[in-house]
Length: 402
Ligand code: AMP
Ligand code: MG
Image 1: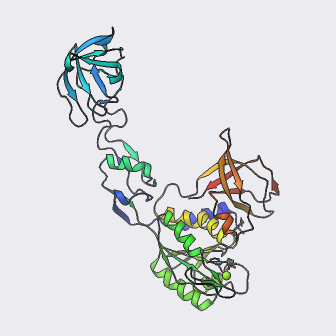
Image 2: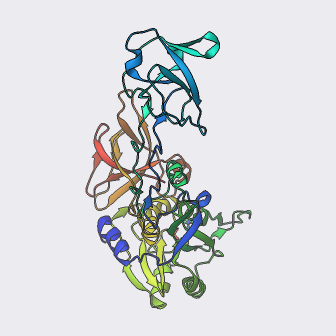
Image 3: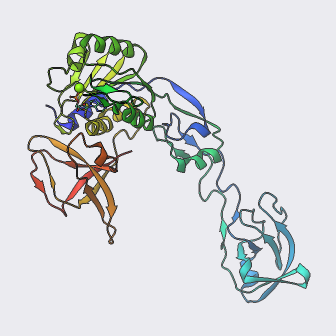
């Protein structure tokens, strides 16, 4: 049994970054991993920009108010007034419009009044130099790097990519993942389970999390607990995918054949027991060119082990800088029991109290098969090995579920 940190290290050591880079449309880029640095191709703002609707003035002209200025023009967003504004003059200006040369402040329209049928403006309050003007290149200078290779493109980044002309963007190729549920008790979701059968859910869970990790997913046919069928399907999948993820059949039961099948196929096994609750029998191997994760069958174990190990590998394949789940500190909201010999990752719901403290509320759960309780989980509470009861109020580490 190896520690989780060691297992993750092995995953990262054995996972190759995929060589191919794709040029994709900006509209399809959310969630993908940047394979190029993003460089500003213009200053931002590209000109001195008005931040308010009002009048461009010279601050010195409006020291004593009310001050009357002659309106000499109008600068609108997309249609600036490109002349020199002189002393005693004002230009009517809109938010986002260029500030004319000669002006050094914008007074907001609420503090002004037009008179003489719009030829004169009365500035009611003085303004200091620079007020309501964002100077050219204040936000970004042309040529600066704004996003870096390895960052995941979030919805919040789209404006940046668009503004610097990235109609197409280079990203890491999507890994091809095949998922295969094993177990003679399983039927597909559109079937009514007969006696001794259950509907399979792991393929769908893994597919959902894998696609959140940027992968394209192929669901393989269900596989019974039959060593020959397992070997056949695993070999076939390993020939056309970057990663095979199986669930079930890795424990100590008489019909748990996944590990034996991998070994008989000549797979290189990197680890097969991790000090993790839930998820101890997780196996990590390579079969041909494909990485293989053999996850336990219990639905909660599947989510925990996928997100700790397989997600890390999928993100590394795409060249992500941040491969692991995001860590935070939270205060335990309810007593919880650890494990004597293994580290735990227990499902929890996060909330904040009235002081703004982040609280982790462990879900009441009936073990690693309790996917109904798990449906509410937004995080996993990490308890070190060898912990008995941990009391409410204790600070601890959590990881956020995607
Ligand atoms: P195993 O790891 O094969 O011993 O399976 C552990 C438990 O998880 C058993 O109760 C299985 O019936 C259940 N299980 C295994 N695979 C799946 C699956 N694909 N969907 C839902 N439950 C599963
Ligand atoms: Mg099984």
